[in-house]
Image (tube, rainbow, N blue to C red; front, side, top):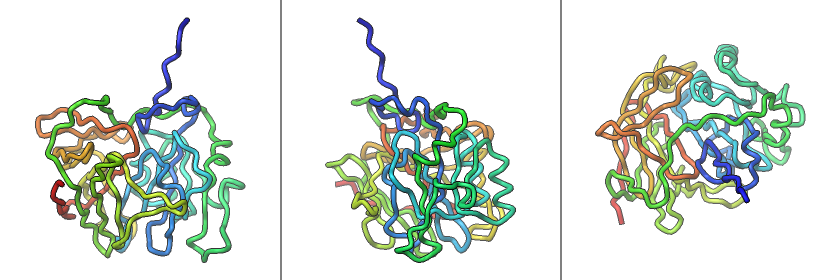
Length: 299
């Protein structure tokens, strides 16, 4: 008898026993990251989460879903110029609340089907137990009903096999020095073998009482054209720059390179070899070139 190899979800590197992600495009949802947004829904189930700097130096999330289908995600907020560079390689669907005309025009240049609050129909709803604008939520299963071509995205990362050496230095984690009170930390959890996230001085715990704890954390230092924290600024994610990858309890310093918007970002170590991630969720911190990191000692 012949057996079919299990499908590997492209954006997490994990086995999908259902095989459903073989016919599911990526769905990127803009998620608010302020204290008023908490507790957030669904971000622990994303395959990849980008943390980007927006006006005033605060951060906002672009959460990419493909292998998991949480019941709701949010609060959903508006599009920014940086988002088109995030979604170009993976395409699929992009969900947001609305946005300034220049930001909407920017995302319209990317190869995604876009859904704002007004166009999402049953794919978004307002939770009237919370105050607007912190009460708009996306329903991924409903948005995927309008998915268009049922093809999965290409992989964004290479993944290591179980037992493969990671390289780099043993690490306890780090504090990402975002400004305006939005510094966030990731500490190595040797039990779960993931990086426990803390923000606003408290553990990052979702509405379903789940600790946000990705398997990989990437810091990608980029230039924000227009000025860090300026209205309408755009993170430049094509070219090359400094990077850092945290995976398997270790820190690997190196560089990121990206040939064009259509290409994925490649993270290389100091010797030029591509860094392999651990299968599971990956967070990518889109730090300004001057944003510092502070390391925690390894246990």
